[in-house]
Image (cartoon, rainbow, N blue to C red; front, side, top):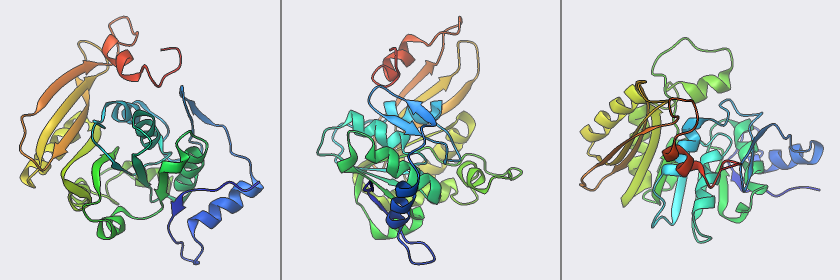
Length: 267
């Protein structure tokens, strides 16, 4: 039986991605190589970047109150979009943009297999194209963006695109978010700590304000290694927080357990 997918975009041969996904779905069952959450499953075997702590943190932490139209830039498997769908009511529509075709197909399958298929869709397009066609369209934008400014390219082109900013610099990401966001909207990102500080500085130079910041370390006594930011175009007093993922004994910290309690099994 053919599954229906909310996915758009056009390939060089003129076929829409929706058609390609239908053909794949008709000939191959959905592979179950992925991660099981309490209310949904994320297959990620066709995605360059797998389900990881960074995406889980952003999906659980991003402020969703008041949001009606949400965008996930560089969605990969669709993990963050799915987490935000779980956290929001049925009136909230969530779009995901993913440049890599196999990942976009898999995100579409993950969306269709979730309880929120009717309000999730994927655009297999470059975010610069979306920014031109959807100005001031969203009140919440999230992204787990590429994070290496310069590095030796890895052999996997899809993983290279997901990891390195050659295809989407942080300055370009901020510019796209500026075009896509409503005046009172919020833009949320997660990055390695030092790169997060660099992006925050670039954002401030471009007229953004820090609404909220969560600095994360693996456990007490270790250096901060992740930074989650909420940026806004409206002046605001920033809320600054720190969190340990684990306690010294290696178990998850109470703060992290509270954050992921609605998602991880056995919590």
